[in-house]
Image (cartoon, rainbow, N blue to C red; front, side, top):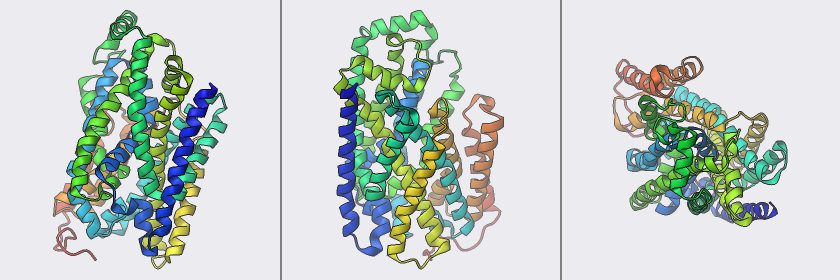
Amino acid sequence: MNAVVVSLFIFLIIIFIIGFWSSRSLNQVPEDSFLQEYFLGGRKLGGFILAMTMIATYGSASSFIGGPGVAYTEGLGWVLLSMSQVVTGYFVLMILGKKFAIMARKYKAVTLIDFLKGRYESKAVVLLAAFSIIIFLFSAMAAQWVGGARLIESLTGLNYTTALFIFAVSVLVYVIVGGFRAVALTDTVQGVIMLVGTLLLLIATIIAGGGVQTIMSDLVAENPNLVTPYGAEGNLTPAYVSSFWILVGVAVVGLPQVTVRAMSYRSSKAMHRALIIGTIVVGFIMLNMHLIGVFARPILPGIEVGDKVMPMIAQEVLPPWLAGFVLAAPMAAIMSTVDSLLLLVSSAVVKDLYLNYVNPSATNATVKKWSFTVTAVLGIFVFLMALNPPDLLIWLNLFAFGGLEATFIWPVVLGLYWKKGNKYGALASMVVGIASYIIIDQFFPSLLGVHNVVFPIILSLIAYILGSLMTQVSHNPLTDQPH
């Protein structure tokens, strides 16, 4: 057990060193470039780092802790469903990619909300977007902090609150100090750890289970449904599985923490390289993680809390020092997602609300102070939220994903590609997306057997088109020069 903790501790020290090293670039930038450097890494990400930061941000606690937990319960059907995420990075950079980066530079956008402000020139759109990011990303962040704390708790034997405190302090220090560049560089280290760690754990799990054939026989003997595409209880219907692809594949374009990556790369060549690397690595990691969850079932039967499958199987089948290294992978995934979300919410408050509407003439020193302070305060709020965790954190994370996608997908995508789209369409789409998502999620879950995000995305598309067509005006920011 001590060797596990030591390995994890060494990993945290490496992350801190990267954070403090990155803070040098913050101190060296001109005062007027602070926001671009702190929230976007100066738009200088190369292809490999861009791919890894997208993967590490997207592959979160739900992928590494929650996902294998559900796969443990549902069987190979959930592995099949999880593979719909392979297209994610490719889709995002293909759709947003070049056009989004060009428009973002045109509007001097540092955040997604900057882009919406430049494109729609509407205070209401900006305020609603900032409100959505703060509300939904709080849910997502709480899920990640719960995952980090549960991992430390199951490794060290510390109680949940102490584990949560250790995790919170670790993340806050290096995000506050280093900004986006620290996040991108640590994401790259974390992405590599995820890649190697998941492969080692999958191999060790197969060996411990007596080979793939033996594991499959054990699963069939326990419940034949575990090796079918339909899940242990037969509830993974084709309609639900295909609609889940919308949530974790196509509609990821609407997630602010992913879209911000599409405005931070250095060149088209870097973006094209990230497309290829990202697609291959996401597929590899997702397949490994979820197979581990299923294959762990015959080795460790009867685990009550799905979120504990990963830490338990790693400690069961690996030497302690290697288990510590491998468990640094989910820790890496959680930390890399948290740091990105923290910066996003912080930028929504500082850049999109404070600088736009409270104090537009703020000096750079004031902005700097506010950026650090808001990031710290937000971290403390999330810590308080995470003190009472839900049973299976993947659902909290997916709720936040769906809410953000229903809010942002059409104002972003149609804002780029449809000249007739205007602020009224964007506003209608966001209001309908948020309202319908919350109503369906609370009162009509799995409406017509599809995932809760499907109908809000369809309704918000209709609202965007109708809202824009019914309020056509001559001026359009997409073709005119921005103000």
